[in-house]
Length: 151
Image (cartoon, rainbow, N blue to C red; front, side, top):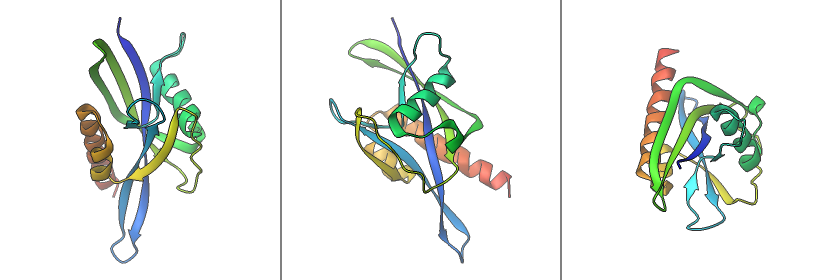
């Protein structure tokens, strides 16, 4: 048996200086209200009859209150992580999604007790699993590369 979960790495862009026209990228992490209170992007187990992306969208709405109309899923980024949970193999698949409106309210489910918007370095410090740290760094690089390509 392999556990399977899917989620979205949600990010937002902040203008940090008019003079420099630079922007900062921040990632949304949720702190679990159980166990070791780990930090992850919104994610959850695949329900019967769902495909992976449907799961990611549903879990994001359930855990953070963000509906699919609130963000854009970026093409070209899909990260699959594999690790063990209590000696059971687990696969977690993430897509990357950009928030459309930075003022949207995050509405946590009872599965989480706190959320933070963090730059990539801060997010990696809170992310427990090395695979998630790598996914966040790769996502940041992907965003920066796409931004340069679009200029």
